[in-house]
Amino acid sequence: MASQSTYEFYKDDLSSIPPLRAMAETLLCDRKIRTVTAAEAYEMALKQWDVMETDQPVYPAAAKRLGLKEGAKVINNCQGKIVGRTAQARRFYNKLNGPDQRKVLGDLREAVSDMQKRPLIKAEAVVGLDQDLMIKATIIGGEDDAANIFNWLVNFTPFDEVKEKYEQSAKLPIQDIIIIGDNLWRNEDPFYHNQGFPQLALVDEDANVIYNFGMRYFGERKKGTLTLAWTSGIRVGMAACHGGIKEIDFSGCKDEDVKSIGKRSIAFFGLSGTGKSSHTNSHDNGGTLPEGFNKSVLHDDAFQIDIENRVCRAWEPTLFDKTDSRPIGHQDWEYVVSVMNHGAINVDGKILPLGQDLRNPNGRALIDRDLLGKYVNRCSFPETMCWLMKDTCLPPVIRFTDTYLAVAMGAALMTKRNLAENVSEEELKKLVFIPYANPFRVYDLWKDVEAFINVFDHGATGYSFNSIGFWKSSDADLRAIPLQTSLTLQSLILMDKLEWEDWDLLPGSQIPKRNCMEKILPGYYDDYNPAHVNNESEYVQTLKDRFAQRRQFLEGTPDLNCKSDLLSKLTNALQIKS
Image 1 (spheres, rainbow, N blue to C red):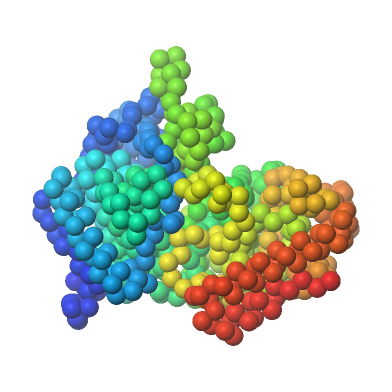
Image 2: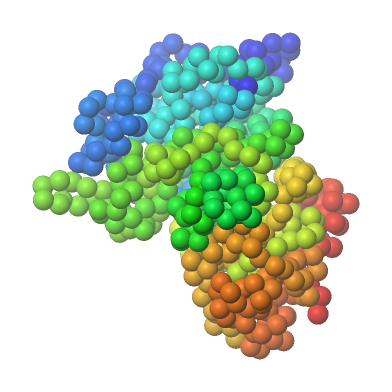
């Protein structure tokens, strides 16, 4: 399905076009703004002051697809103080009061007028890889922003690549997306967020428009576009997922019990550092999947669940990955298309991008999906939904038998902030709640809650994985939870090899039984059983405090407490019994 132009969507009443959309559409209609291809944007980016050309080849298949010249090299776009997302810069137009809306509109008109004094370019892409869920998008920026426009075309799909397929799609009741960016915007008004320098992400989710002002970091363009795509999916009854998902096909396995499982999709929701990509992209779960299995990855960051048709659909053809664990010579560099905020090093006369976050935190690369091996643009409904958390009171894995507990744990997903975000040192130390690991949600939380209730009601089972370590004798003295242990648990879940017992402290949840675990991970039951912790009374009190924090977070969320019955069901499920 395809989206609609401004005229198509509003033609029955053109007076209903929202002002942010009207401004964006007006700029879009300026014939002085040149439409560029990925190849043209790449050539312009090479001349950009904050871009350097390396000697690392662009992944050849991607270079060919994007129309780059033969032998094209990876570009490195480096920023200064800000090398991550700035969530506090977001302003939601539809939630502002009347005077603030009028103020912002005036500032926005002035900002757009300033943009038009410089040469501007634009590019068109399609967000969505499955023909049944495609949204046309346009990005506008200055010639000095060519690197972001090139990277945006890499991250999504240049329109000309899928024009025929797109035009054959049925129309969605959704507008095309418009993204407008100006790196040079400056406004010292304290109404706008200033950390590093003034920044503004002005969002109108109903109009499918975002303005990124003063924001050079590519992640703002990418996540802004995805924010509108996820929201568009919610508007047509789907569940928005900031997570990874893969489909495992066991039909080629020799073990008849495993073979009979057939295909099974498993989804992971978590912020950077919780293991989302590791769980999604691992080739064979650390050698724990049986001979004969077949894996297909949909994506490791963003997808939509079409609950009615029981399928999941991908939004992007590339991965936007951290490179802190990819040194020079790592095999993944073969698939890289573009990098940002990387150091560089001269190796025998060749300038190569240097990963491992040596220049700054949060070095990123756009990597072709070929890295994943086999991938698909749609996969089956996820029977297994996993929340990835950093909570020292939780065992390595929990299964939820109560739908409202499963949904509540996702809605109050607990983690810590990380260096992928532009926040203060104080903020980095705090425990935070990011519902469903999606800091880019711009609609009311109850819509996500209802969507995920619907997912579980349609047959999904919920799990929690803890990656930070489990209480040994205190919140600081922890038993490590190796990634290999978590991957083994994932495989056991996929193959129905675990037996479960109720966790008495948290009604509606279960932990693995001793007998089944001793055969596979000897000592697991004693090491990670909450009944065996040292300083048990302190542990139980900390567990109670954590769940009290979860309840308080949900109760203090305005866009959820407007649904009192729904909120009550969630908070009642988050009760520790001792």
